[in-house]
Length: 227
Image (cartoon, rainbow, N blue to C red; front, side):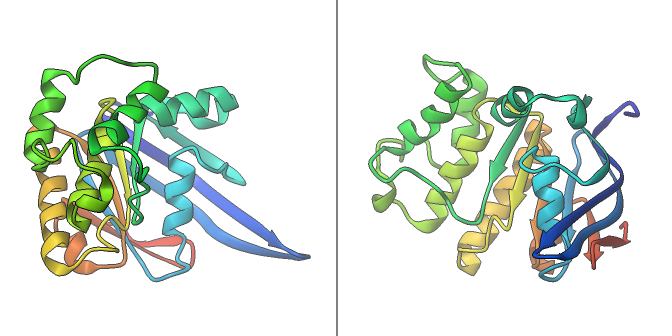
C-alpha cells in the first residue's frame, strides 16, 4: 500500500451465484482512500456499493482482486485476523441502529470495548467524543427512551469507542428524518475534521454525500466517477 492510504483496492471483483447463474456485483474496482479522508460512495441500488463496503470491512471475501485496509492485506488474514480487524481497526455504523434494548446507552457502547478485550472507564479522548456526539448526558438511558437521532449517535459512539483507524458507515441516515439526518452528518464531519477520523460512507442521497470531502459514483459494479 502506498504511504498515507487507509484503504486501497485493486481490480476488485465479486460474483455471486444464484442457482446456475453467476451475477457480478463488482467488476474491477480500483479505489484509494487516504488517511484522514471523508469519502462518500453513491449509486443506485444494485450498483455494488454495499458489496464493496462488506469486502472492505472484512465481512465477505472478494472473488478476485486485492484489498488492503490500514496496511493489512485482507487476503492474508485468517478468520481470527478478520475478526480482530472488525474489533479494533474498523468501526461500523449501519442504517439500523442495532442497539441492545435491555442495555443502557453506556452499556451498549461498553459491549464493543468488552468484545475488543478492553474494560474500565472510557478514556479522555472518548469522553470528548461523547460530548461531540451530544449524548454524554444520555448514557444511562435505554434505547426506547432515546430519539432515533440519539440512538444513531450511540451507534456511532459504539463504532468509535475502540479508536478504529477507519469508520465505515452504510446509509447512516436512512432511518432518520431530515433534522436528525443533518445532525448525524454534522457529527461525522466533526469527527473527521476535529479528530482526524477516516470515514467511508455509503449513501444513495446526494445531500448526504455533500458532507464528504469527495464523492465516488458507482454503477453496475464499477466506479464511473472517481470524484
